[in-house]
Length: 517
Image (cartoon, rainbow, N blue to C red; front, side, top):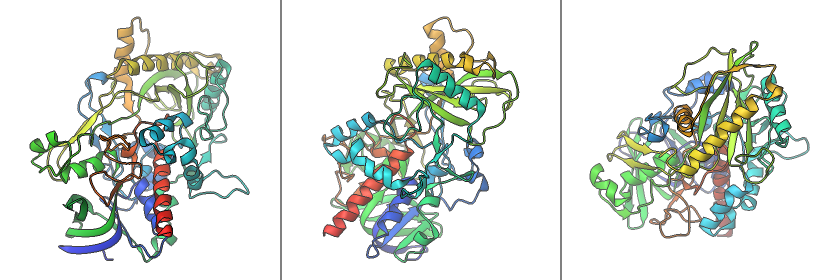
């Protein structure tokens, strides 16, 4: 299969829409079967910016040409601010932009997934083989997967080690990472970093050997415009290619464009909530009211800021080096975490506050692991360039606000500990807070996205869920959604590990089905 020019028509067995984390893994795994022709399209290009591989540069990548740079609607819960959502527009997707922390989540995070679908594949135990197949934990004598999961104890800042000591004295268990089923405790974060360089999905799975397969084609600069349907099947996909329009026919279409573009493409193709289509001038082919609903994201308060007593050396990793998970109001209770406090080896604050010079201050981030606020996404037109209405509905539930207060209190308790006295001169933010209203006002200004949008095409056995347990879009026979949009609910920490496990589980099912046939 060639890249194609204006008006070309291509055919393939499997079309993967989106070359990000899920799409890249699927391209590699499904092309292991030499009989299957696999075509992966990506709207962006190959990664070339050397800053991408520099872990410490990751915050500066946002807003560059390979960032979709979505913007939410102004949020009443965050002091009327609109939030920029960085999402990767290049091969490797957001694994090229994210903070590289790797956390599977807590076993109880996945119980709602199994319950929602009625399928044990989506439980902790069911996903465990996929996690293990994906990961390389640098353990001698143990076979490793494609993605390095690096323990960062040796490189962690002395501030981070003081933060961990403070948490341990308060009663948090000292963990050896976040990936063994226990999350409550303190530990340096495990990260997708190798020899001081980011490891993105394209590095791990789309190796030169994989790219050389004759049955795999990667088409960059190719944006999916619309799914064209015949009955209950995708007949072909209209692509806006580098040299003009291209039509692609495929036996199976795997939608891996992420929690924003996957539902947006469905809506632009007439699949989604009927009420959205009139305003967007799109014909409704399948009324699926839940597409674009259930939008979720983690927030972090940025932050609980401290001036240093002495110069703080820069992080040798990526600034946010340790996440301490806990129950609200307790440093000693176990179970599924409710809140998190992160150690930032830098003065990390939202745009509402004065930026301090690196080395002169540090910040403890704080947040809620399982927010109950639910937002939505809508299209405004039929074309890919038409604006998306993204409303995460941040902090719209009292439960979320209550837990955020507890997270801030936990951060300040750790921040005032003896173990940090060597580094702490004084607290800069938030300063005195006398009332609940003052606390909530500070949190509203401090809150920033943790970059984990999910849930907009949730999987479930109930009639309103858009996607079934096999990740098939229920309205169609040959379209599957495989990305963070299928997650019914968030995991406790960063969602990247879970997204990869979803993709690997889907790939295993698809390959096993092919063998049985």
